Image (cartoon, rainbow, N blue to C red; front, side, top):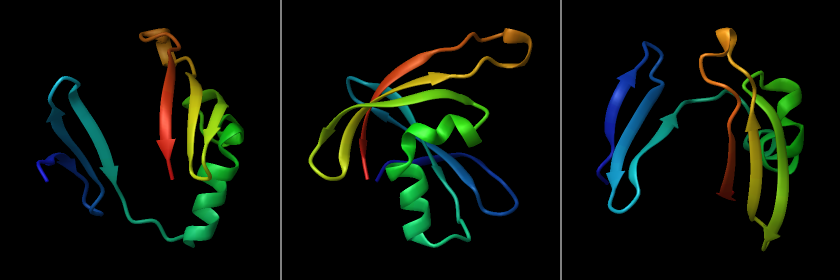
Length: 97
């Protein structure tokens, strides 16, 4: 599938990357979580706009539009980093659950 491991931790978590033509380098994270899938779906999809309450890297998430049941367009604002080396950034994403 073309994914290359960038780094792997002792517990098996992996950061992987691949280059997509016309887009550039993209990344994905593979981890094993000890949670029920229904709970993860609820927290990461159904309650997406509350992500800033528990994720210190996220200031705000807003669902701009739902496309069908499991696809949405979102706007995310990142939190400021320590030392403010990189200021807050914002993203528009298409998310498919």
